[in-house]
Image (tube, rainbow, N blue to C red):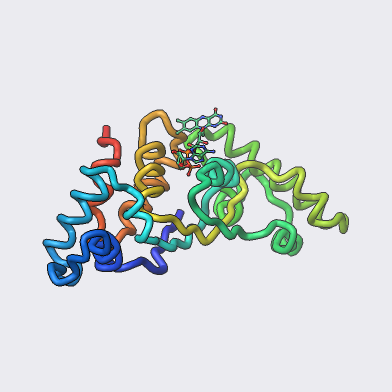
Length: 206
Ligand SMILES: Cc1cc2nc3c(=O)[nH]c(=O)nc-3n(C[C@H](O)[C@H](O)[C@H](O)COP(=O)(O)OP(=O)(O)OC[C@H]3O[C@@H](n4cnc5c(N)ncnc54)[C@H](O)[C@@H]3O)c2cc1C
C-alpha cells in the first residue's frame, strides 16, 4: 500500500482557534514550541478536544483491499472519495487469462496475504471476474463477484481528533493486520511537527 499526505492544516490555525477563547493572539510564536504546547495542553490534557478539529489532513491511499475499505468506511468522522468499480472495472477486460503462476501480474489487482492457499483462491476469483467481464456483462452486475482482496484507492480526509481515535483503534493488536499496517503508514506520512499529537495513540510494536 502507498499513503501520500496531500495537504494539512498548519499548527498555527489550531493554536489561533484556541487563543480565540482567551484572545491571547499576542502570545503566539507562529506554530512554534509555545503554540505546540498550548495545543497539547488544551486539546489533549484539558480534553477540550474539539479544538483539534481545526487540524485537517488529506491523504491519498493506494493499493488497499476492499476488505480494508469497508472497515475504513466505518470511521464516520472522516470523508472518503473512492475509486468506483462501476467506472473502472473495464481495466480487467484487456487482460489475458490469470493462472496460478501469474502472481506478479495479479498483484496489480489483488492484495495478497501470507497464506498461499488464500492467494491462490483470490487469483481464481480474479479470473472468474475477468471471464464475466469479457462476456460483456455490465460492471454494475459483474462487481458482485469481486473478491474482497481486490485493490482500491481513495482520497481520505480526517481531522486530528478523529485521527487520534482512528490510530488508537486501528494500530491495536486486535485490529485487522492490513488496517494496522495502514494506521502505521498514515502515522508515518504525517508532518514531523504534528506527530507529537498522535504518538501516544499508537499501540506499542511487538
Ligand atoms: C478491533 C475492532 C473490531 C471491530 N469489530 C467489529 C465488528 O465485528 N462488527 C462491526 O460492525 N464493527 C466492528 N468494528 C468497528 C467499530 O464498531 C467502529 O464502527 C469503528 O471502529 C469506528 O469507530 P468509531 O465509531 O469510534 O469512529 P467514528 O465513526 O469515526 O466516530 C468517531 C467518534 O465520534 C463519536 N460518534 C460518532 N458517531 C456517533 C454516534 N452516532 N453517537 C455517539 N457518538 C458518536 C464517538 O465518540 C466515536 O468514537 C470493530 C473495530 C475494531 C477496532
